[in-house]
Amino acid sequence: MKLVEIKRAIISVSDKTGIVDFAKELESRGIDIISTGGTYRLLKDNGVRVTEVSEVTGFPEMLDGRVKTLHPKIHAGILARRDDSEHMKALKDAKIDTVDMVVVNLYPFKETVMKGSSFEDVVENIDIGGPSMIRAAAKNYRYVAVVTDRSQYPLVLEDIKECGEVKINTLEKLMAEAFVNTANYDAMIAERMLKQFGEGFPRSFPVPMEKVADLRYGENPNQKAAYYTDPFTEGPTVSKSEQLHGKQLSYNNILDLDKALDIVMDFEKPTAVVMKHTNPCGLASDDSISDAFVTAYDVDPMSAYGCIIALNRNCDMATAEEIKKHFVEAVICPEYDDDALELLETKKNLRLLRTGTPIGPEYRYRDYKMKKVRGGMLVQTDEDVVIDPDNLKVVTERAPTDEEIHSLMFAWKLAKHVTSNAVVYVKDERAVGIGAGQMSRVDSAKIAAMKANESTEGCVMASDAFFPFRDGVDTAAEAGITAIIQPGGSIRDQEVIDAANEHGIAMVFTGCRVFRH
Image (cartoon, rainbow, N blue to C red):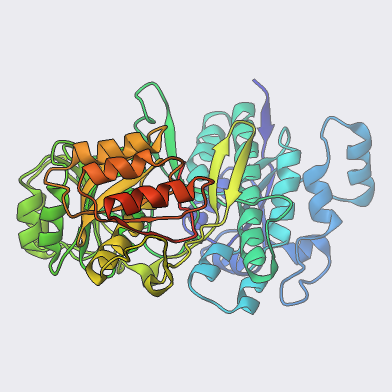
């Protein structure tokens, strides 16, 4: 197995955790160390024999440290191919020594953005010399070890302690991780600059993603999976939530938690959603979060078995006592009262997450929505057209009452979160029946009635897209629906309106489709 002997290393790190011990180990193996700025001072102060980079280049750092390693005596020493006689002759003629290891982690660009620094400080924390050295070392990976994260220190030291050199399979692994490191770093910079200056969709779409965890498996046990997050996403998210109790989150748990959190973000009053397989099977708002949960769970208790629950208020003892009565996979909410947490922790497998931040419309952050397809990715804006009740277009002979309008607006918020074709039946501020994911809209209307755990008489209906035929309205009438909200826009709108008039149903158009594939 091919090995690389390490005689000379350059160390320049922003995250200095563990670097002194690592450098001392290298020094004990007779490896010469070059360093820069704060890293140089730290190593020297801790008794490491270290040479400052300016002594190697013969040129002082300048421009407040912006230029220090960008020099032929550094980059030629990294990039020279050791098996190329012309390369090695060029180094000898220029009196340049090889650099066999590059230990670099980059300026804290992400941390600078996330702590709300000024744009000038954000720009100043764009690393230039670091990525250049990493890329140079990674390109010449057969002869240079490139170390870009402190988690790699033990791996490198293990090789050096075992055989005095770094193994080729280690070099290959380090090289791949180095390019992932610089790619993600550049993606973070690009994303931040696009938010500052970009317009529309860029020619290439940078997506900075950092691994949160390896998962036990994907949607099914035969699939492997991992969870990644965009560090710059604002507002409450599953990835930024703290898991307080329970087993590791599964792939399907995360999907349902994300969707459930997205739903309760739309409501100002205390609201609970019961989630199953990326569709809500219960939703309710009430004066207390415990009453909201009880009502939401009772919408479809059979489907709710093994559900995910999201609350937009802290989980208090009354709510915890109700949750404990059921088999629930996970709960996410802003916070748990101490006694409520203690009670729920008695359920061994119940996963408990807290966002640590309020949940509601004012805390929602809208960004691009992405969906991976074979060979590419679809990207769209995450826009939510706010519907003003005063601007609803009444298209039937009977206008909805104030009470019906109130229920229709609640139903509309629910419908836009249900997989299409979506039809929901609502009474006041609670779901009564939910029809999701059907190939025909009339089937969704039938399922909404079938799934209802109480009479649908007097409910209102919301449809995420227009009715292509009158049969959906006829089905609603059979269920006792009194008012309908839908986008409108079908070539058969008049046929649908006539059906509503025949049944004495009030109907309003929003002019906005909220279809979700």
